[in-house]
Amino acid sequence: MENDSTQHATMAMRMYLENDFLNIYKAGKDYLDKPHMHFWLAALSFKIFGISDLAYRIPALLFTGIGAISCYGLAKEFYGKQARHIASLVFLSAQAIVLSNHDVRTDAVLTGATIFGIWQLVLYINHEKVIHAILGAIGVAIAFSTKGQLGVFVAGICILTYVSYNRRWYVIWSWKTLIGILSFVISILPVLYAYYVQFDLHPEKIIDGQSNVSGIRFILWDQSFNRLTASGFEETSPDYFFFFHTLLWAFLPWSIIAYSALFNRCKELWINKFIFKPKLETLTSLGVFIVLIVISFSKFKLPHYLNSVLPILSVLVAGYLTELYNRNKKRTSQVFLVLQYVILTTGSILVLFLIFWAFPMPHVGIILCYLLLLVGLSYVITTKMKTIRKLIILSVSYMILINFCLNTQFYPKLLLYQAGNNAARVIHAEDINKTDVLMLNGRPSWSLDFYTKRITPTVHISEVSSTVKSGQWLFLYGNKLESLKAMNISWSREYEIYHHRITRLSLEFLNPNTRDAILEKAYLIQVE
Image (tube, rainbow, N blue to C red; front, side, top):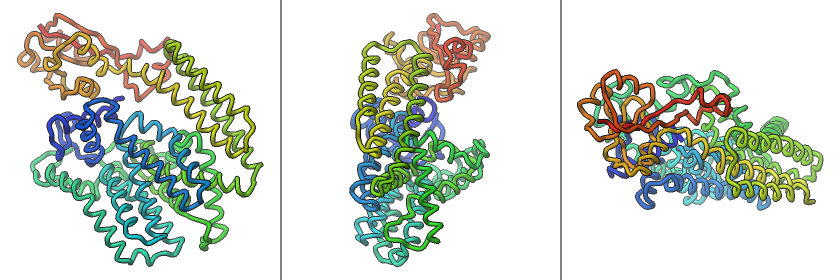
């Protein structure tokens, strides 16, 4: 889906097509904002599996698997064998994690690498084996190489709270820690070198109106500072509670339990005056809370910034549920079960209403799958089992139902209103030579590029008459069509395609009675 997901896929595709892995370009211009790892992994996947949406998702899926394994290992280290499977299930069923593997950006790789680094560094602190220091450093370095300092910050704050509470400062001064630091520096060198080649070696380049831009300085300092102050970015939200209420949907179906676990753990630490207790850990509670407080002061906020803390919260939730079970807190468990029934039943009804109201009836085979899932869910609801077990299985089952509905009916229908991929479908269906297709510049269509497996050349509207040859095709958005007519440019064939920014939905778009009034149009025309 445009913008970010298809944009990133297209940028990685260019790397693969041109065999250029040092430079990142966006619409033909130097791209400074995010480092290279996500694009490298996607380009490598294209090289192995060919260009496809599945190939683009493979690195995200792999790092989500690494994230699940890391949650498993970290929960086992903190809370024992009972919690390990629960932590993985909580992580894999969280809505933002599912979404990050559907609408793939940098977040899946960042999340998996961050929690892997934290897990390994905790093992190093507890067991002082140098291999864990090296692996932890590599994990944090991959997070840095994917999205800059965010992963380093999250891992750093969590590990510092853990070391501080456990009074293990002596580990920091070990020679093994120096090996870990050296491993981190070596692991980030490829990204630093790529930034150096693209930017530091070319001070003449104009980036956002400035010359003498240092890529190394940007990724090591400016990127994080600019996002905190919204310098170079449009301020997105002045709300200091943005991440706290965004967590309500991002960590569904576990958000209420996570809030309770976070509150109870912080309350316990406060009552004990932060005095060390062997069976109490602060990494998943105090560490996460500090991270949320700090990023809440950023003037540039987006929901997916939360993703890197979700696996840490998954471990906290697993430990909390295990504690409720072991302490036989039936009343609290029952309250959570009732809340899950109310929240998830309401959510499922809303999702089912949305997909059947907003779009035509799905295929009968999909309806049968819905019914089978509902039967399975009914079995879970009616079967007698221990409260905590039912709470976990019920929550995961509801998320399977909701996301199956979204991925088989809602998202595919949305893509019918994204012009670029539908223009690509016309090009394939009508056997149009894609090398004859150009795009009017000023408004890129990443999905047209990706689904035609090429970077579509752009042409300025003033140059159409002199540049576009007879018989060639031009893709443009509707607001430019009248300008072409005014320039006496004619065409022999025309395909009209509906368009809407499908990642920014509105009630007017979802309502089938008002949708047509707000749809834009795009055109694929063959110039005479």
